[in-house]
Length: 345
Image (cartoon, rainbow, N blue to C red):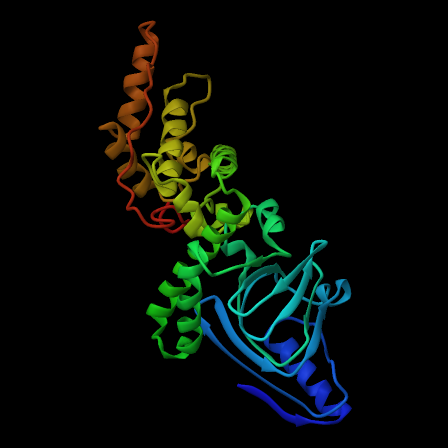
């Protein structure tokens, strides 16, 4: 916990500014009055989610482009006004925040809070990429006060208040699971506010899914292709990536392996003056462990890669098409990155 108390001089105000900037993100904090100033800030972590509680006398808080340039990570924040009021500005919008209201803000763009009297607030910060929400949706929600008198906000406020007061009491495994649940709730809140009818959100999801599938098809030969690398490329969380594939009849890991096996099957069925080895074909399509490739191929097609090549080239000699069908879902376990890393092939 970082605390300042009865701060009457410039040096102690500078200490408070530094304490807030180090706990949250670099910002300028200026007390509104000339007399003694009192402020307290405490922070805990739930996995990748940081939970902070700040209580202070009247002040102005500003995050400028120069301060943003000093930050190394893009963060999203959700503020919960516990007591007092605030005027919040971001993305050209001005919101009057009352007790019990929520505000969503992006630390990569300038913003300010003006607290006219003593106040208390909870601040939840997380890497923006973990949300898996389009930037356009976030921009629609920032600069607005979200009331918690009814609807989704009415359920969210007591949960967040309880979580903030008990964040230091959870074992690591429970904390990680709670962090994932909180991120899902925040993503739902943003989607609900940005797309009240849900139609635009469904369209955005479909477009993102198409981009992910195209990325997989273009990078099958990369042995490091995995749910983690795909999520990083598309600036979403692995959790949200797996949610995209719910209802698709497969998982990300299974799709990667299935597409690799299909391409290997097609190449092994071709005839030519130079015939690559089975190991060379497997490596070209992202398998670095020949034994694993052989097991996966047999599980998918019922024969070994060499037997497949013999059968298909024999069909070609007889003038018949190889008639390659798509490989069925592989036996890869339904877990992120299973059997897709270089060590597993």
